Length: 132
Image (cartoon, rainbow, N blue to C red; front, side, top):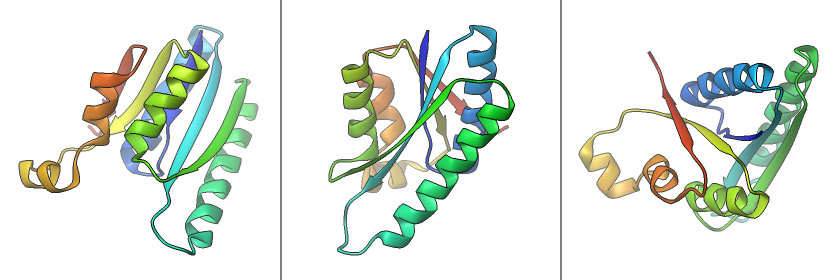
């Protein structure tokens, strides 16, 4: 079983990562952790550097836990939700795990919802994890 986790550094994403690690151990699965940086300004070097460091820490943590883990930073002009769905389809994942946070209707209307897009369009089952 191949598991993909969308990781943006948020608390829900950290919870989703912990759930994904448990699944990887339980099913003896490979775990891929992907962070998407949406290109919107000329210089996003600080954001990219922060994402790379977070992925390095995740890789080290998984290694300590005996989990086969690959990390990937995708820099795209499309929304994170669209990018993750396309990536999941391209790599034929069997499970996609994402963290979700509660947002008001106005926030969803103005900003859209990556989680909703992923849940409705992913080519594989999606496990959404929220904060307690």
